[in-house]
Image (cartoon, rainbow over all chains, first blue to last red; front, side, top):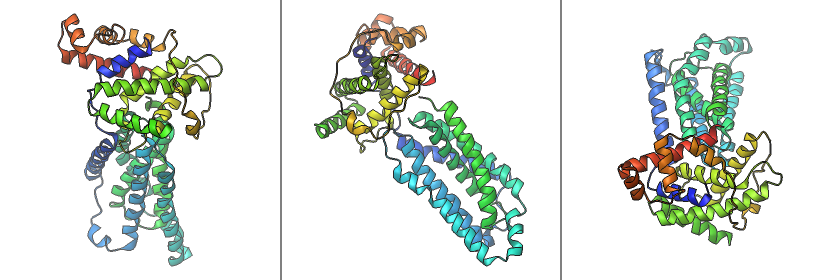
Length: 212
Length: 178
């Protein structure tokens, strides 16, 4: 087929319209939140003392970390799925969540006596944390990988990894409402491991499925 | 020159997305010429036919045109897709090349005209289900309109549009999967 001929075929298909990618991403996040919420409520659900817990700094700080991750990963994955869009600024913002966690860890080390560090880090729930964050996040990850296929990421493995971070941040936000371990020492350790697992899964998914 | 190109391409693509077929044809012709220049300069050793890269890029631009934001510049978007398809073409032929990211400045190539040779896209076309293949080749190779194709095949225009759309999407996907 000559290029001329191909253009004729593409031109005849011009009327077909797809949803703009930016709008589709918002829709995908809505679907992903619905899936995560359903899995969360059907399995572990929020902790019974969530109302009083909301008045404590440590409990609320968990949402600051996870929502910072969600916001920055969402901004980055959007530009990664659009060819030619500059990723520099969105990439720089990815530092926000880790910096917040590190600051909180340092504060925690100051206010908690050294004898209690180990207890706070190990917590009471780490196996639940490491299994339920991936469990809640796997559906959203599938949605985000599907969105990457709909988009056009020129770096599919990186984009897949960011899909994992976004799914992990979302899942961790829900999980945080269940978890009794509010210490930044616990969050920095076990949440990170669980989210890293989803990130790895996302990178593999990006490598295998995100072809266009 | 580049700024004028950019503004003109942006105008054409916006009109095309709004449904203006003539603007879309004009847009695709200009893009084909630019990508051809880009591919010919990048492919210094043999093994990859620049025209294959042009066609794969045009297909990708077509099926991914919803990834362009109307407030974003067109040329970086086009060249990012072209670079991706070029690397893909080398990868498929068992070669690794690196096309640096910051080459946009030198990619504003002079438009070049096509040379004829066998295309990968022909093989992809041959792999389509019969209905899609006859619709795509009627419109492309034979140059028939949607209406003429519908009359020739004895189906509705809507059916022709659907087959065309699915056929093109399937060809584009095949290049991504290989």
